[in-house]
Image 1 (tube, rainbow, N blue to C red):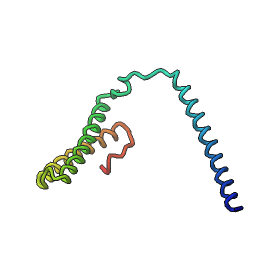
Image 2 (image 1 turned 30 degrees about the vertical axis):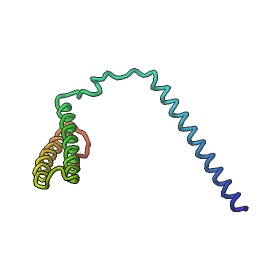
Image 3 (image 1 turned 90 degrees about the horizontal axis):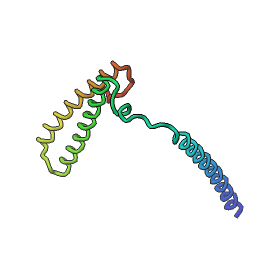
Image 4 (image 1 turned 180 degrees about the vertical axis):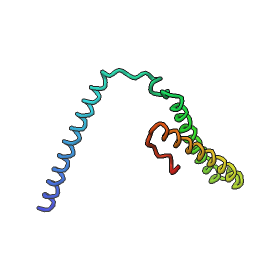
Length: 123
């Protein structure tokens, strides 16, 4: 019975500590929300449009590379479900992989040229 009581007191103490941490985090989040509510929203063109032509090329290449990765994933699922054959899968996958690699190389070159420190997946 004493062990049970001790265990419940320990649990109560832990819950009190967690509740205090939760209330502190909520108060901090509310303060952040209040501070940011008065802030002016940035112009959408400044956020979504690259400041330079090279930056725009970088955005486009990264988007295309991610699109190719998604296409490769869908192609793998199509093979798993038997919608395409192995020969078609290999032919399409090799082409997509080659194109994706080329895009990653360009992304790496542009990023280094802009002085960015990004990981382009081993390229």
